[in-house]
Length: 175
Image (cartoon, rainbow, N blue to C red; front, side):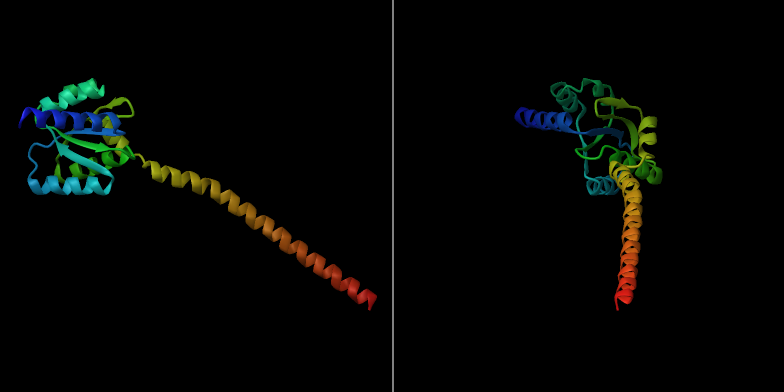
């Protein structure tokens, strides 16, 4: 690779590292092309990406992005999963994929300014995603409100029935 190409790669990686919500580092040793392609497909479906990077270029990009704490993970074959959306979803994909194929091996993660160990990433994968939590909150708010609406509409129906009965009684008394 020519020096200008390396500089472009480092610049692009630095941009990705600095703007990503979640960065997951894996050891992809023992994975064949088919497995890597399937992992990339699953991560892409989850709004994440997976790439293999040269350690020296990644370390330079980490210096530029201000995430030097990740440099220690760039030893040996390193694959990087990056997300700009929900931070938990790539953890779920990587952990589930590793359960099925025993690869890739998690090295660590950097999520919202905090470093995570492989064990913490596995625990994070067991948590519901942000969207699942938001759905739960909306349902929690919606259920009592729909009960209140049902109760109020029942009261108005009953009031309308009483008023109709009163009007009928008054109509009979007048006639």
